Amino acid sequence: MAVYTQLKLSEINTLCRPFELGPVVDVRGIEDGIENSTYFVDFDHDGTVTHTVLTVFEYMSASELPPFIELMAKLSRAQLQTPAPFQTASKEYLIDVNGKPGLLFPRAAGGHVSTPCADQCAEVGEFLAKMHLNHNVEPRICIENSRGLNWQRDTAAQIINALPNDEVELVNRQFNDVIQQQDKLAELPSGIIHADLFHDNALFHEGRLSAVIDYYFACTDWFLLDLAIVANDWCWGDDASAYDRVKLSALIAGYQAHRKLTSVEVELWPVVARIAMTRFWLSRRKDEIEANGRRLKSAYPLKIRLEYLLNNPADLSQFC
Image 1 (cartoon, rainbow, N blue to C red):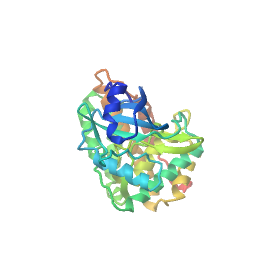
Image 2: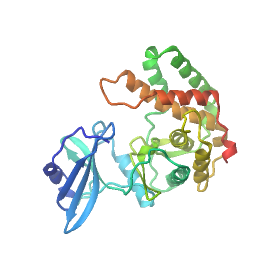
Image 3: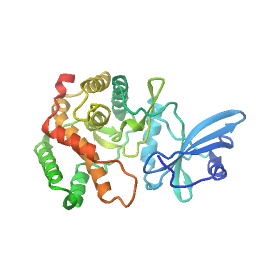
Image 4: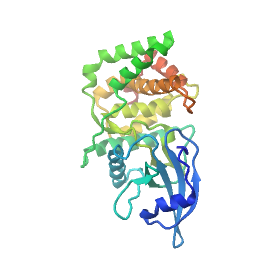
């Protein structure tokens, strides 16, 4: 979250009038983040204050957003910890903010955790399993994965000449490994996944998971990929050299309390964990090469983790 589109209180009051939440009484721009402009906006309707979050999309168009809106609304209806955007009096979700699409969300209680504990890993595991099971509930939502294996190969080809030799070797080792497993990968259960559930995309209040946010990379892919993305961020050890076994065990236990992993998923965990790590490492590495002064997350920690996963294939059977 960040503020690129500058808005005054009076402008936000006009923009948000169709939601009929009352006049805006307080606005605060949120500086943390990278891609979108974000404001905390408070409304007062006859003494009842409604706390909201206004997101202005800097890169996504209005035509790209409906599947993600539909997904958030569906998960919210299923009582999962997902804030669904408000609708206007005319049942519209999107508003126009100086030519950019905007959404207004209820503000969930709580905040981000800097270092998730085992109990929090278990809770997010439960959430993920319930989200995956919800894929079978109508209406089914399908969204193409814009950051899948084809994207990884294309991105690597674009930046390969800018990479040092050790990173070129890392890319080649990883892709060769994936090629050897392609037939088995096709057997993995799939459906709609979050695909970006890093710990800064979850909120906790009084020790409990209160919200999962930022669904804009959600897509149809392997459920195991979603679990691996979470494990690669939430369950890494304090020294950044390996998984924290207690946290990983808690994540898997929380997940399996609602959805049992298949034997193929357990078998393919090592390769899918590496695919998940490669996706984010390549994304950050490409951004670093093409930075142009933008604020970025470092790719280096993910490189170290990918090297570890290549040299130390994780055996998930001990946690199942």
